[in-house]
Each structure stands twice: as C-alpha cells, then as structure tokens.
Image 1: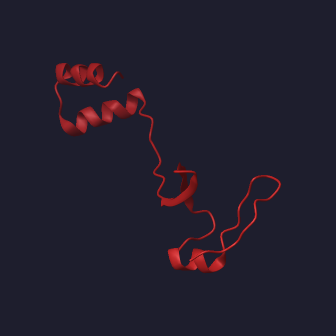
Image 2: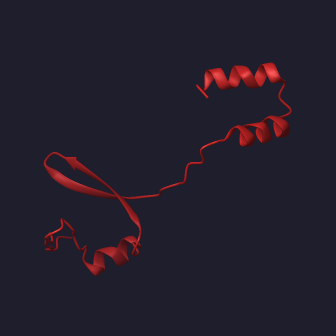
Image 3: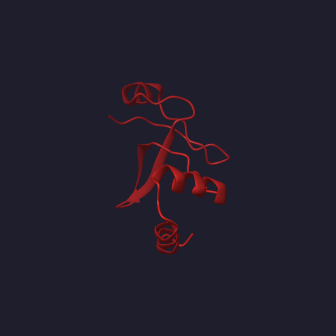
Length: 81
C-alpha cells in the first residue's frame, strides 16, 4: 500500500487515516523511527516508565526480599547504586 503525505513546516508528518486504522494507531501512540537502506521506517512502540529508586525504596526492597545487609551491599556495588 502506498499513499502520499507531506512534511509540515515543523517536521510533522500525518499518517493517512486508513494506515492508522489498519495498524490500530491512536493519537498519542509512540513510534520508533529508523533509517533502513535510505528509507524511513516507523514501528509502533511501547514506552514504559522507569522508576528511579531512592534510598528509602531500596530499603523497602531489602525488607521485602529479606536480604542480609551484606547481600544488599553486594547488590548495590554490582548495580553501581
């Protein structure tokens, strides 16, 4: 399937409605953009939030896992925390 679209003044691209419907894409969905052999390729993507652990949160993990202090320290060293 080939369709024509244009790039707007701010670099925005509108995907034709038929393509969006066929792929189940909705406003706000995330796409990965890559170049492949001189072609622009768009792939649907899922973005997951990343939690940055505080010292308090690490203490919760230690309690829940019942880790010994020595094991926790080794884990912190291994994970560069």
